[in-house]
Length: 452
Image (cartoon, rainbow, N blue to C red; front, side):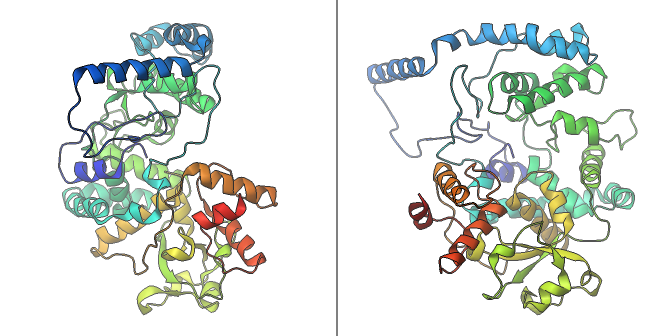
């Protein structure tokens, strides 16, 4: 996700969307002063500014000083030959990059000659304490806005559900979560963002593919250069599609001859549904159920590779919250245990559709937010029965160190990236059980200290 949750909530509620803050570490503001010094003397400010600039110059390798020149040379000698080979005209290429310079304020950049590092602080909401992601202000903005738009777009949503099999409330939840139902501004030039990141980010190959796809969008006449506005991550339009996703999934649902994910509500909604179908959305199934998990059932059973029939989970003592039985139609179908905060938060049995939602954003919390918000749009606002515990407020670098320690012991944590995904969570649980501790399946400061 490329915007802060509070900005999405403000946009969904109709408040003016502020410019999204950015930092060198991630897509949100880092080290921002809140209620700090209100006034500084001009001389002191000038001295501080000079010192800051001097420090920046010292940290940039000498070979990286003329970044603009290196960027222009890269465009012409590296990117252009590949674009030309893919059928992009010089006219389109030049129009896309005229006046474009690398934006050094974007996150996740690596200066020429420098090495990437794991950021200490996680700024995107998916990477913070799990409970923060479901703040009432945030989710209520999506659910209230979703119900309003459900009525206004009932006919279109009905046609979309009939064609694609994706419930309208799921589509609305994604629309609301991504851009506040289109109210959030897209302030960046997509070619500036994608070009910068293809040139000097931690994922240059990924963004190279995306900038070439953006050029193809313009070359094919699907959108003009001046319409290619994006988030800081290069995601386009109201559904926040990366350019490759636009080419694969965007739909012309209003019949005007081209898919317009910036301005056409029918195209936006149908494109979201089409995306989910392409990733395997199962018609007629929901996303999952909140459950209680007995202590005798290990939290290390979590994950999409450890599925069981829902009847088998029920036989282990796992039950829906509120005393409701699992639907009879679901009992023979496959379900998966999800415990995004380990033993310190709500638990769920999810369906394959949950993992389809993760294809939109590879975060368990994102997919859970969408499923939960969709339920609230359709059935009314009700919070989770389980409470989120005070976990997750750790530096990414600390979690990465914990992951590396587990890897050294032979555990599969997925990737030592500082993000506690399901493989990390269950590896923690298995290790805890092995040394005779109660399995919590989530990193905390004590575990970090013990494993370092």
